[in-house]
Length: 378
Image 1 (cartoon, helix red, strand yellow):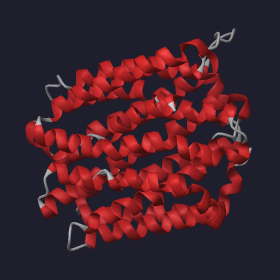
Image 2 (spheres, one colour):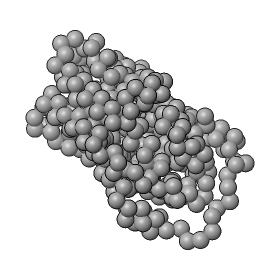
Image 3 (tube, helix red, strand yellow):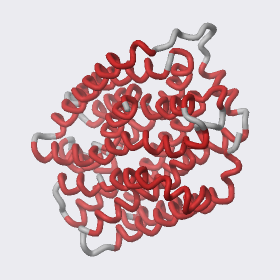
Image 4 (cartoon, one colour):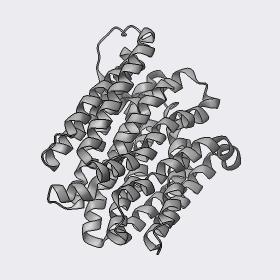
């Protein structure tokens, strides 16, 4: 439960900036595509930092690393409130991601340590509900605060939430922190050893691909809504929160999904729904349909993602924290690359064609996975 609380804060920090992008572009006299660097910087920092946090969790204790990271993320979030241009905001978001990235990856690894394989996909889904709730509220949080008191106050409040969560984690978990393991700490050697295994390399490739296509498109849906329907930032935030609501719906129905569809069915249906509802999003004539689209897109993503991340918790039991960190780094890196590529695609081709093509990529990934999940077995 406490790890889910930390993941909740990480989820808010990940998603709160999406409805802010048009306002940030206006405040700093730049384009939305240029302002999206604050999304890319967060994802790149996340991708790199978990490569260190995974081995740190294996060596010093996963709960210890999560608690310290959450406290430092609070300080970085408050720093974002004092940014003077897009560059400085991207830099502070980078530092926030370095510290806020621990709860989800190490939380999943901790579940791998204590939950049997047969129960793990359901348990991971329940745990990830904390992050999903944060991601659900993140766009709404960012949109409402941007409308009411400005984006700077948004970051200040987020920092206070992080610091409070860190205090609670410390008080409740400090007695369970293990003694550090002896020996040399060499994360590069650990990851090199893991990447020598073919299943781990496939896992990394899938992690990059799933978020490249899905979040490359999703991050720009808010700007598309603003351009086409001239909605308020609060309305955009509420609509984008549908992704998290869809993920929560998935977590509540996960046993039924697994029993009804099986692993192959999960990834096929998830990919198909992703393509269909990204396409529907750009052709709808009534903006209220966007709410249903984002909810279904959340379900679609987690049908694919939770299947893959469950494999990540079992792919290297001898170095579980490091293996899950590699996967988390891959999907964060994929998001960063996807957002950057989408920014170029939008500038060249426009929102609608780019969103549909990225949605198609996600759909094709689901089909490929249905025939290749065996490649993720240790």
